[in-house]
Image (cartoon, rainbow, N blue to C red; front, side, top):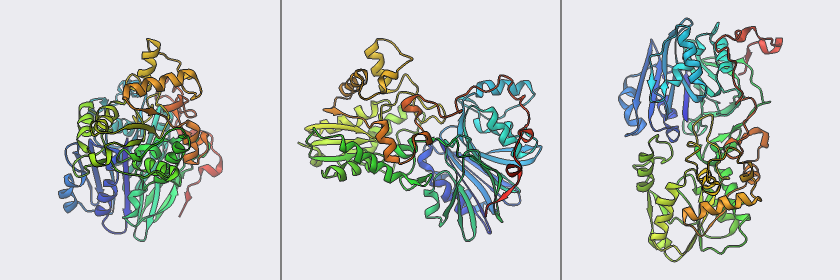
Length: 499
């Protein structure tokens, strides 16, 4: 996952760009990048795995100058990427993943296209996107052509002399939002980046929508569609910042709702207190406590000064180290108590087992009742690496243990009323070593969000792919007709001045 932010101001934009981008630090832990366009492009990229984003860019902040710029914090690739294309020079930052990169890259090599940026995963994904766009007749045609070619998800910000082109991925998996203040326009992944920078939300981009943001406002270059808008549900459950809104729905409120639904299902246990695993489990726990009438307390507190999220680093060793060190137990709150532990999700289960539950038992907990705010994760995310490999998932390990082998068809394990589902949950409960384990249901999770089921990506839990997002692309890679030649209505061909 990445977080992207862009701003076009009447004056210098550097301070707003720095802080707007920094508000995406929860979405990435590996690389941070900024580019400001003044007389020329002023671009810097830093490894932020061992230090905070702002600290790395302090000197850049003092020297950069320009009225427009884009920034990104990423867990995957170094970006923004600079490309001197046939359209002129531009810089680009992306949020997404190209699932069929292993097919696209060889096809581009055959066309004589080279790549200069590489990561541990191979060709830098953002450079691949930039090179695909450069195959178009113009930037808009190139973005649409890129959308046609990739399998996966990509939202992007592209900076050139004209302003910032913002494009949301065609399936609406990742958000992009336009904001306005008296002297500037901005576009962001997280709306929480707007609040303290004094921006007001004016538009959530639709899937596939492309706009140009410049000093004069926002011009729609291609309309989007609401027919396919299946935003990632995990943004509300875990990944997104609590103060952010997605499609107008606040993440903190959804998490409280999740906790309320969990509490409504618990009529057969007596507990002394409710807690949430910091930080993303806190609101789930608060919702549970408000619904159940049980006191919300903090048996585990997070040492926030030095440790970020234990989920985002790519190294499992690093994730485990952070998980162990960041949570400090309070014996005086734990000892002798029956505790409900609300967690956003159970992915691998190892951190919860080894570094959360163990600390509670070791400090004298009487009972531990774990309540994840989402259903068992059965499928790894295909679009943005928000879950681990299929073999690592706790639910899959349970199925493997119960069946004696890996099973491709796991449909019988999805229904909470089925015997196989109950056996899977019981296996996970024993593995975690807790008194009881009860997951959120898909239906209750959807109710907590308050959005129609068909408008959510639920792939991680159901294995049902959102719309055409998983369809295989043409075998004639890079040989499709230019997007500008496709049939469009007169209305869709017009540039629309939005504000």
